[in-house]
Amino acid sequence: MSESYERISKSRLNELLAKEQELKERKDYEVAKTCRIDYEQEYFRQQEHMQQLINENKKLKTALINLALKI
View 1 (tube, one colour):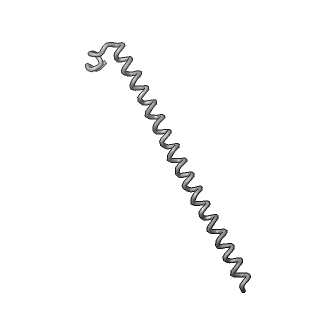
View 2 (cartoon, helix red, strand yellow):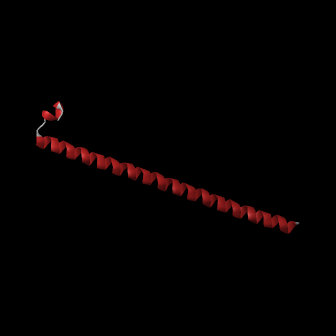
View 3 (cartoon, helix red, strand yellow):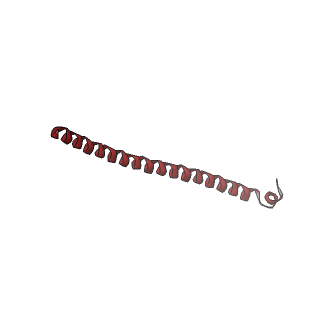
């Protein structure tokens, strides 16, 4: 053991190691949660964009049909 660990009691060391593991797990959870939220936001942004394109396409089809009827 290193000098810093030698000054700490074994029970305190185990307590600190458990806390460190808990913090690592919490960090991993938060990172995964953030990635999921980012993915969901991007998914909904793309869905909105796709709906805008569909609406624009419908308008263009209507305009094209109206133009064809005038000819």
